[in-house]
Length: 121
Image 1 (cartoon, rainbow, N blue to C red):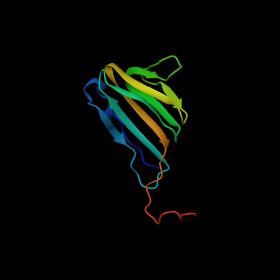
Image 2 (cartoon, helix red, strand yellow):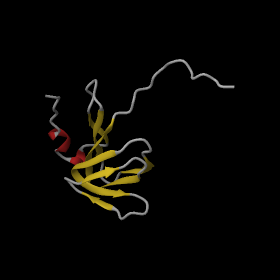
Image 3 (cartoon, rainbow, N blue to C red):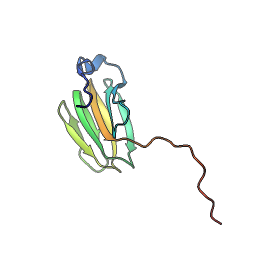
Image 4 (spheres, one colour):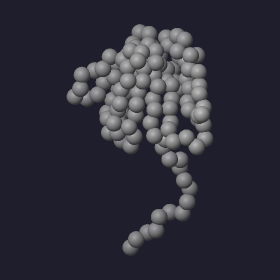
């Protein structure tokens, strides 16, 4: 069996949980990255595009809105799941209760130091 985590501490009170990463999957050798994030009441994550990875977003607590250009805003509540394919442009905004959500995506390869590629000429 893999590793398990109790996220109940993350879910106790999203309005007072602060802002930022509350939990991160950090086990060595994993193929996935997962993060539980707190977005404090009224805070937002500005519009951005993930060009390389599909992202699965699952709302754990609180409420908010997911917006993407050209689409209707999606109201976020506990249990909402959104698949955001690579290339999706989006923004998140927390409601008055704050927002706690989980993101899961393929792990990005680590940076590698090696010789530069050959120069063609």
